[in-house]
Length: 302
Ligand code: MG
Image (cartoon, rainbow, N blue to C red; front, side):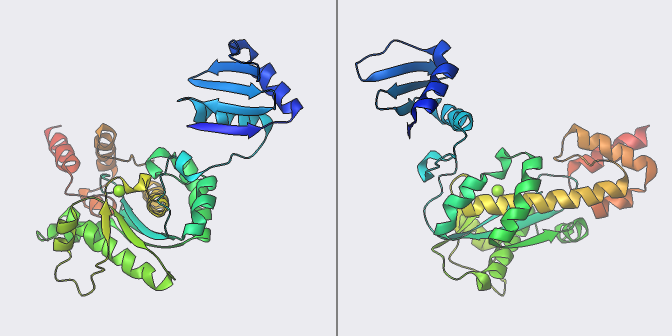
């Protein structure tokens, strides 16, 4: 990947003074300055055109834009999201691996013309964004784009899951189908509906068999949040709504509930059991996760 910038002489001076300790010999007469730093080669030609090349060029280009206080030119191929250049509806879910808190599924619609502005806003796969950044970004997104979301609270989840016919993937399929159905009336025109794949295309439609409304022109794509900005938006919105719900539940129990299903969760369960009856988990957690059984057994041994 390479970047080209046209500099003023004072900007060139600024870059040279910043990177002169990393300078390397010129290879021709047209070159004013060359440097190698963190996997990138910087070349400033006598014409004051600067070229940044190499594996580290993306980061160095970012640094240089900051130094010169100029806005980054982001082209679609240079961003981490590949962002297939089409108007799409994307969906993603959050919370399925977390013992505490709901499952949230969101659908987002991004028309072609909004792809670049959203990238400039910092939209990418929510897993690569901190929760702090998500709390900042999501409210803006929710104003800028059309979306729909469903929050499946723990009571409903536990009820549905207790019915043997409704496993996690089936629940996901139902929720994805629903958010797509809900967003469609607000979407003027689109080329694709992309679901971040959690199962195969065939199984997805198997899970939906018997539903009154089935949106059929849906494509399940693996790691879609890296490829489609609409899916990235959906993942950010879903994560945001999940974090808000986790906040509420945390306030209820009086401490920050941990995410995931690891050791911290086990400890939190023990802590909650000191103050509450185990019935509370029906309201704040997914009781079919092994964490609860494990903790209850531990408690009964104490
Ligand atoms: Mg996903």
